[in-house]
Amino acid sequence: MVWFGHPAEHERDIQGGPGWRIRRVGTSMGVETDVPQALEALRRAGDPSRHELASDDPLADMVGHSPAMAATVASLYKFAPVELPVLITGETGTGKEVAAAALHRLSARRAGPFVPINCGALPPNLVQSELFGHERGAFTGANARRIGHIERAAGGTVFLDEVGDLPLEAQTNLLRFLQEGSLERVGSSRPITIDARVLAATHVDLEKAVDQGSFREDLYYRLNVLRVHMPPLRERGGDVDVLAQHFLDQFREQHCSYARGFSSAARRAMRSFSWPGNVRELLNRVQRAAVVAEDALISPADLDLSPNPDPAHRSLGLARIAAERDAIVACLRESQFNISECARRLSISRVTVYRLCKKHQLQLDDLR
Ligand SMILES: Nc1ncnc2c1ncn2[C@@H]1O[C@H](COP(=O)(O)OP(=O)(O)OP(=O)(O)O)[C@@H](O)[C@H]1O
Image 1 (tube, rainbow, N blue to C red):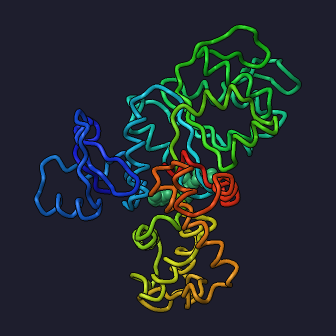
Image 2 (image 1 turned 180 degrees about the vertical axis):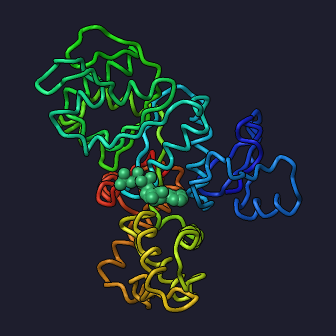
Image 3 (image 1 turned 45 degrees about the vertical axis):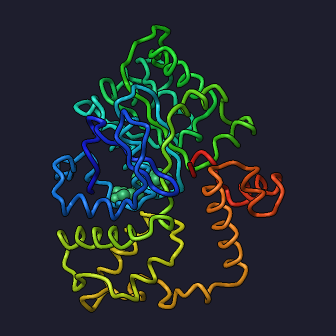
């Protein structure tokens, strides 16, 4: 991963969005630029402020430098030093846990523990005890005191994946921890102060969960102060190629494979695929392809992808839906997210813009 300037010192900054701009922090002026071209120019010029991340790089696990990912990485650098919760949103498999680990490693807490918890996988009757711990004798079977995950993260960071799956009672205790920095183990009424930063992730719409009464509104506002959006793989352009080669190289470090790279048909197929399972799906398909490939170049068939990803071969219905979504996203960006302006440009009503955003699950905050 290559980055501009020295983000740790905030010497330079990047702002995402249409018509990419680079600006020096401390100035309000930005320079319109094409990010990949600017990266190349910095590389050629040997700019001493260019920060090429080495193997001890906090972002080593986060491969890709598409504009969509650069915007995400810029947020990670900005949010890492701030001792506030961060809510990481994005479809399944987009790398929310990878981003949480990067936030931890970029923060002053990097020497402390990073404790990831999948809230959706906790047995409902044990959620409180798993998160907050319990005292001996707190319930049948509690034969000894148990330290909860949040307490284990003392001095570091706790990452609550699928936070929307927490039962309401655990949400109340989490809110209290976020507000007061203290928790009570199950079976104890003595609050203990724990210094742990909370990062949370969700792939469901928490606002909807708040409307439906399954997620506390006050907790939502507490978690949603800083927000990082992981873009879906289909919006990351050439990152698909880079990630695929990275996963193949990684596979070959431990296993034998005839495959060294990808045929151009395979690259085309990967670029056109919609990747509903995102990076995780790409990883799985590349690993499978590396096993079955009988050639140095992986083919679309090895990846179990259609060799003819020409958009014309999509059903007309799917093509229409994709075109409608692309048009609305592009227009929102061109209109600087001004709904009235977007409606005017598309010759539709403001209500229709809102309806289309809802239909395509577009979150304005995330697009920004
Ligand atoms: N940018 C990336 N570079 C390299 N590997 C990545 C990247 N993003 C994700 N991965 C890999 O993809 C897989 C899925 O990532 P991760 O578990 O972080 O996704 P997630 O969004 O948290 O998924 P879920 O919503 O299912 O919890 C992991 O194996 C991870 O290492």
